[in-house]
Image: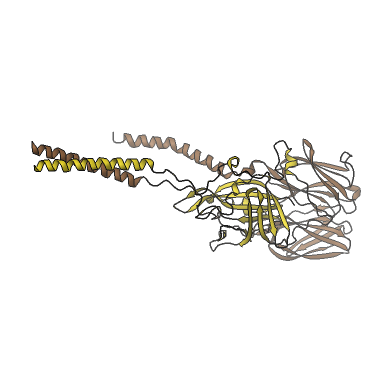
Length: 286
Length: 232
């Protein structure tokens, strides 16, 4: 008999606990999903890295939406667009001669898939005679406290180059090649490129949590180096959330009912005492 | 005679007791269960002070890609050398929620938390994040309210995808962003990597408080984060 109530209670708790946990989980999930995160998006940038190819118009189409497109007019060698955030899905990039009609047959066309949270560089690469569209996967996260650097070798005049940055040296990079990302320590370093007959260098600040693509180009005065920042984060991520409110517009909590309950209990005790004394007085009288 | 007085006293006690019970019950019944906030806070955008139509808010019939892929601005012939220094931000304007504020600089507290403005009518840029318009997530924080009433980011969670955000910089230039999403997160599960971590492109995050206010800790339990991406 004594155990009946606790065991019932235990059963009730055992039944309710998973339900409660599920509710908490669901509400947590709902709260954690940002309103804008329901649509999957990725990032695309477009580049012309073919030294002796003329300027082109670059078209970006979303698969199944031929009318929805982005057009970059008169893109010449060495041009890299900023990243564009686009819905995840299948895309086609086409290059037409600068000024050609949108209905004209493209010089080059390639299709590719944009995945959620990923970034891509679509570049016209190689010599004009062998121009191709290359889809390059870009990294957007670096190992904690470090930076990532890679090289795109787009110099035709210096067919093979060696690029160094601090302690990092990438030897014998061939024309139209893309190196893998390499981890480097954050700091200010000299980026240097050396070809067979030309060389150049530049100061390159590299912050922690940043990702860079160094592009080697043919300039009007010899080799040229360009630092594309693929991605960057904060120098230091603050701990936790932000204390940005003091509650002046928040609903006030309900006042505690205890004082009034105490008053009622006191009243009840008083009535009880009165009633007992009344009965006692009447008993004494009789 | 003595018994009669006792009976009267007892009766008075009884009646007083009953009266006290009645008073207590009435007080309990009419006591407000929860007071409203000092300012009438719209719960949904539809009931809010009408938001100006977002300049480029994609309408429902627009094809997704045109909505999300505005014309790509291109530097004429120079490559996008994004590591070029970007001037520091000095002011913020969000027409959709009538925000116009100078920007102060924010750092970290001694315990490594995000500093917040000591005033309630200004927002601040976290100077450990990239300046708005540079590659990465620029972070701007402001209060939702003071102890007395609404503060600079009171209506931040009413922003919707497409709404424009303008950041004025020290060199006179303006960086323009479009809202891509709004999130509400419990402070003890703050998505640090998503908000402060590395991202491609030029992005902006606006942070304030939201959700339930904990009157025992005198702090909101959640943060509102608005995500935006550069459009120029």
